[in-house]
Length: 422
Image (cartoon, rainbow, N blue to C red; front, side, top):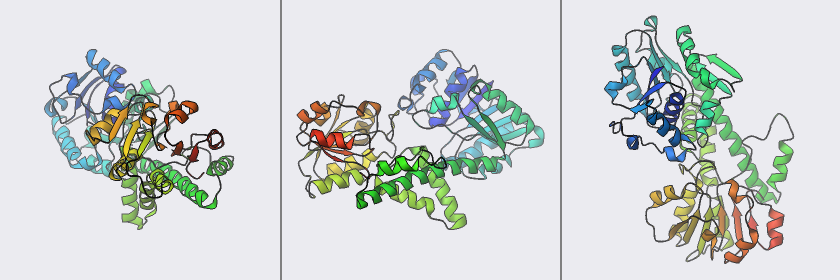
């Protein structure tokens, strides 16, 4: 199929790359430089495992090209994957397409514009002429977006038009081998489902963090409590790991969107409270460090392992590391950091700060350190060389923001250890 993808965010590039790899010819309209040079294709694709390589190969094979808006109108199948605040641009695109292709026009909306937005866009089209817009929620998670797109467990499609459904199923057929279920519903129901799923995950994360903070005050180990909770099959273990707060741009956008919807229609502040408490949770590692040193951090060297908002990605969007580094620098600390992927992004974010150093080796980052904050649970941090850590650190203090270390073992080796709810 010949398809135009509209957008310059992760879902747009993921869709474009995966569909091109499966044999489609993809044009992508980013709104940036449309020279066609692959170096101009410039979302942060390097943050996402495998995505840049997939894009490069598709360009090399001649199945993916960056084009102008005018060139993008020529195809009969389109995917709109824009930012939540770009709804007016989506209206403009749909109106232009309606005029350019009066018959057999398929548009797939992947954007987070809110519940009912796809139906509103349909009003600019003539369904009797097979001008149809459907909603296909972006279920891919940052850090595994390409894999999630290519190996979906479930596909939710917001569409009631039979012609459009046949075309969408044909488009997604190469990715259906791992599929357990097709779910077809109205576009409004599909939009609400995406919001509801994200909101539920946020509530679980917020709840376990609240329990962890309470466990701190009651002097009980939240990990023991959590293990007891997950024995109940009604609860399960997913998204039930306490930590120093969640991040990620797209996850946050969906939660904020549902929070606004709930407050406008139900006067409910449930998810708004989750968001507020999550920002407080990001401060927990610093607060424990602050108390340990009795409110005096000036001239101390503090180390951080883990800068990205989660393992498997270089993205630092809304990551706990940002707020903590800013606070440490404001307190006059020297900050040494390490991350397998996100070091360069931190350097770009903070610029050439004289008291911030990014290291390629995690052990170099703890040299003469007065404390180590673990903020992202990358696999390489789970079983470090503890003897080397003791030899390198000025003060063997570990504040574990993800509860990945064995508390008793570290204490037996001579470390001072603080976890989340431990």
